[in-house]
Amino acid sequence: MNARFKVLTAVVAAALSAASVAGPNGIKIGVLTDMSGVYAAVGGKGSVVAAQMAADDFGGKVLGKPITVISADHQNKPDIGAAKAREWFDTQGVDMVNDLLNSGVAIAVNKVGAEKHKVVIINGAGSSALTNKECSPYGVHYAYDTYSLAKGTATALMKQGQDSWYFLTADYAFGQSLEAETTKVVQALGGKVMGDVKHPLGTTDFSSYLLQAQNSGAKVIGLANAGGDFVNSVKQAKEFGLKQTLVGLLVFDSDVRALGLNAAQGMKFTTAYNWDLTTETRNFGNRYLAKTGAMPTMVQAAVYSSTMHYLEAVKAANTDNADAVMKKMRDTPINDFFAKNGKIREDGRMVHDMYLVEVKKPSESRSAWDQVKLVATIPGDQAFKPLSQSECSLVKK
Image (cartoon, rainbow, N blue to C red; front, side, top):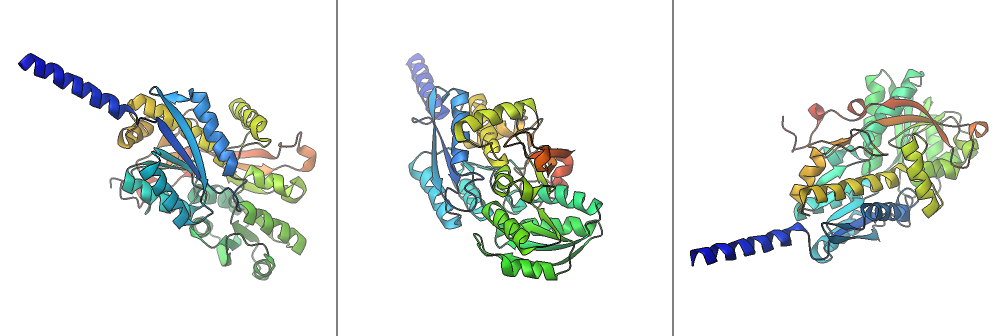
């Protein structure tokens, strides 16, 4: 009887172990992004393609079960994003959510992930609050943040004597965070901030805001916005005849393409990725170009990289349990075309090198997507906020 009991116990334990490896429908990844708004070119359908490329390159299966990629448009509304994530987790068996353009949406979804014990990887949103007051044990801020953008770009401009600033800011969590982080850098280096004006997301007419910026007398107009808002504000500033230095504090390859080199030439900005940095980035960029007709933005490239890192962690942990997977993701360095020796810290920040680049003159460009040149590499330990300054509750003080 005792021997039979032992055999039965072993069979039950094996069954429970097998059941815990992965859900019956395999691994499901949800790409929650802006499909139709000002950030659609930054992430959108291109991020879905990137996640699917990662799933296919992984082999289409993990732990013997299929990998499925689904997607939805959060419409840049935190309530819609949070509701969709909750629905995915509760009724559709989604294991991980990726992309999350728009910081307001990302903060809302990060909270749902913490509540549901599900992995949330943020590539599109920039607010540094995501690894500070809004940090989560299941959240990873992978591509960039407002601290790293401000540190790279503002430091470079201040070294050139561009020491008085005025901000044109998107009026929500991302824009406010980017302005605040840049202000800290400017003031720490002895510069002066002469004011700001905030505009709603999706603004089409920037004339009144640009007039206020012009009248400020500042040497630099810092554009603390992104995507379609950034493109429209630059185009209208050129039409307006603005003489001050325009600085994009978050610029994507898709923005430069939309503006054209004539309008964007000479602009310096900080990025986590460019397709033409290395042989590896060129290989990925050309594969992506063949599928989409465009080179990937840093968000789309990071969606691929982070999805691959997540799947590797699932395989290594031999389970889709979020706690086990997050531990593997933190313990395993990231070495691919996107990052070298990247490391996910306890606050969820993925630390990696950032790059200061400059938009080329039309005469310097060799091809349609040959848009920027490397000015400087910013080591990860200098690019991102030190843990000693973190406000994240998960960080041991």
